[in-house]
Amino acid sequence: MKKIIAYIKESYNELVYKVSWPTRTELSNSAVVVMFASLIIAALIFVIDLGFEGVMRFFYEKVF
Image 1 (cartoon, rainbow, N blue to C red):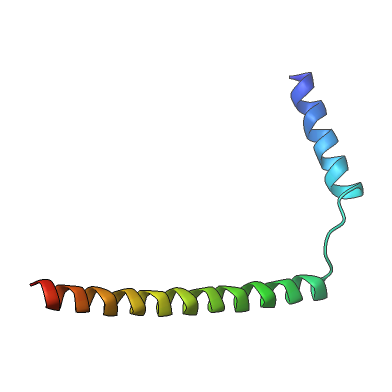
Image 2: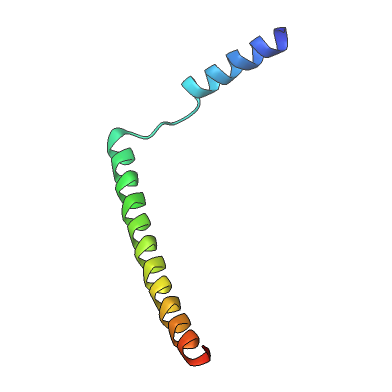
């Protein structure tokens, strides 16, 4: 039990005194970057999906 308590205390001390947390501005900027990257990736996947749909339609119309 003493090891668990020591582990929790050490973890707390590390989080409070050694970890550098981002500022609100840095966090906001990172969130905006992630949002735009997600939108770009979603749009890219959408375009690829449309391309595959066209290829499969062409293939099915010719075969069947």
